[in-house]
Length: 217
Image 1 (cartoon, rainbow, N blue to C red):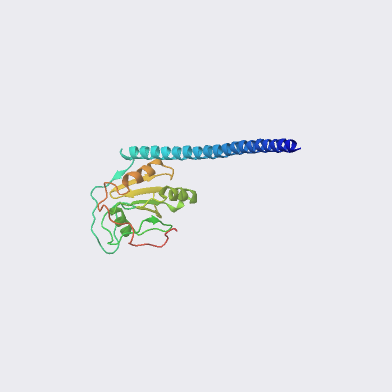
Image 2 (cartoon, rainbow, N blue to C red):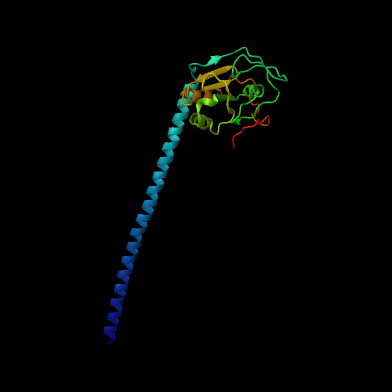
């Protein structure tokens, strides 16, 4: 009788051990699947991020390469004056690309109302690029220009009633006109001339000055 019970105990223990071994094998398989899936997701994320970074680096290199070359259509005005004056100023170019200007600059940003020439010329003296557009170009084009400016600093975007071309990009002593917001030269102009070599006062601020009405939030 004791031998029979002992054998039954041994059999139960053997069955229990087999069940436990099977459970451990199942857990190992599930863990392998889980961690393998997590690893695959992480690898996919790493690859995706790497591709984005590589593409961004490539885009930046291409933009810098284009900016290192002369931009077709840019007009140069090397002899503009630069005195600080009070009151209105008559400029030879429209929009102006330099000249005598107000002692207070316009703060950089995206505006929905026209900007004062005299203050905005001062901003360009600090290295800002001013993108002006004819208000009649339509909201879709204005949205594209706003997206083009993005989070760039030292850029002003504003309507300019009476502008002969749809878009004009100006830096100190320089101007490029364009028929569309899609003109790729606008990106190159920004890359080349935001605080570029033409800047008369490198390091000067484009904030802390005048904020005219119409600054977009």
